[in-house]
Image (cartoon, rainbow, N blue to C red; front, side):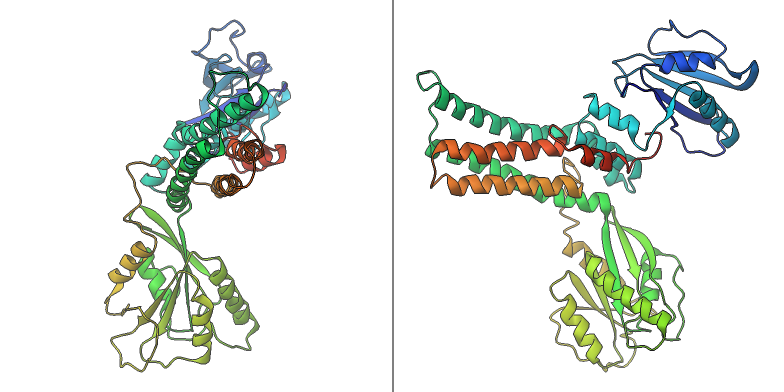
Length: 446
């Protein structure tokens, strides 16, 4: 990280202000080359008025913020150029910085440097990205808890408890003559490990809710042609997005929309009607519908009240029985010709606006949305961190099983494994390729 990077940190377009961020050892020197005032000896955290120039030609009237290491976001020298918003002007200022020695920053590189320089840990870095992408107020609060380090503290506390046990075991082994150190036995550490396991279980339980808050719920609407799938999507998203006709096979491709339920984003997908067809284009849509069944968190299987079950209907009911699903019977305003053995169904009429709120309530019930604790949003929320937490739980469970069979020094190996896995969550231990992959998902100037 010996080079100096630069990027546009605000959305590129017409606006009042654009900000170009420069970070690195040569940040002040490079900006000084294109600024009409000398800022080489400027004090930290000061703002300077002047002009960006190119060969004595004024490019823009700007304010420049000087922030000297280590009290900056990246813990390097940082200069932010506040220029007038506009694509041409902003790009010209960035071009001059690159011509005078800066390198264009990679996506997320400013945040990556903050992490590598110890300014933030990995969960805080992920919190920054989550904050940028937050779609609801609850999502924003969740991200802030990550960003401020509350989530990291949960993991650090677990690691500290493990470290105390590990260090005590090592002292017992290496220095048995020390009488003032507690002699740990398998029997003594069992309740301590059990407590850690319970702590991890509680965090996992809450973090599953955190994942829902961050990513939302993916809902697929499945059914035969002309059962009302597109009408249901339009109702839920309160927008006429999907084409609705009486002609079977109108929907050939997936149509997506979003709606908010109890502060949670629901990503809903209307699929092509599932039936046997000789039409190549329609068959592609049917194949996509089957893919949606595999990927969705919840399946809404829509049936017609005035039509008998077909062989295809029964096949799909068998296919979704082990997934979260809701069987919804539409067109209850028409004559009933449907017989179904499903234990629980939701009966609606989209046309007559009957029973639709009960469908929403069922979604709330399935995902316990009313139980999500919005007062304490100290959760992990990324699939990466939750999977690592589950892996650390496996290590603790392994040690609890082994403690009955092996001496205490063998148990220490399992505890060290758990300690290292927890370290991966917050970035105390990491692999370079993982870090590159995480930060590549950030926007260019962040």
